[in-house]
Length: 378
Image (cartoon, rainbow, N blue to C red; front, side, top):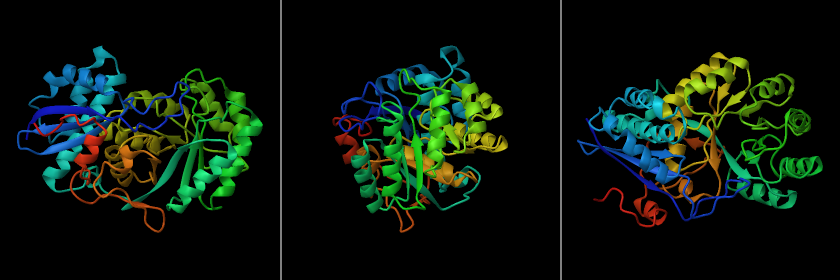
């Protein structure tokens, strides 16, 4: 089975806020779907956390390398793409685009063999995974109202991030966390994301350590991105002294970029994003390496229904990956898969057990968020 063509289409119209200091608009494209078409008419789908203009340009550069390749060998093919792109820069739009191709090739391999991707990754340690509702922070009262609403939908784990946290005052920070903890159940998980990868993040190690001490009083499960994304030494020191586990790594791409952080002991929780780090193949390698260094992988997943499906299969195939991120309020996640996503009574998501990624795209929904752009029907 050979790769015949790869197509991409950007999602627009309902792009959710990202919390960034230069906020994105609903019409901005930060998520792109890719489809790998084969000579046997099997199609695989992937998702890329990158603007569609960049993805189209990257595909044009990569085309001589992927056209005619074996569509049933995702790890070898995407490693070939990575190895031949060193001169274009190791990371960035090229690597992000390869991520979507890798996810789509795993989808094809699963469809061709009749197996769910998680089983092809070496076996499934679990059949369901707890999603944590991921939402932007707000002032205490609206923050509480939002969490109560999500709790009523069945979520039992929550991550709040960005917004005013670390940007107004220590008093505001604690008021937000107090309101969040009061809104959810005592045994519900609560995670906090400072958003240190925001442009010109002003807080450093001393702020992060003081804040971690406060978060420990509210039984926060992890403190994410408390420092600038290149502050390796400060992350190491913070992890050594914090009573709250430290999480990060969503801005890193390629498994090699994670090694210095894991070797140094910078993270309790490492958070590669399969839609930009190099796909399922690269994420799995990072996950096993993390275990060797005393950390565990919980995927970053501010993405689409295709990205969530990839994360669920990845979580099923890693022994300590028992959570996935679920961005709330995004139709790109809620509406693109036929039938949507449904939490069970325990607040868990079933890992799809049908071949490939195990989801069918709702092409009417895709058309709504791509301005009706022709994608697969020509």
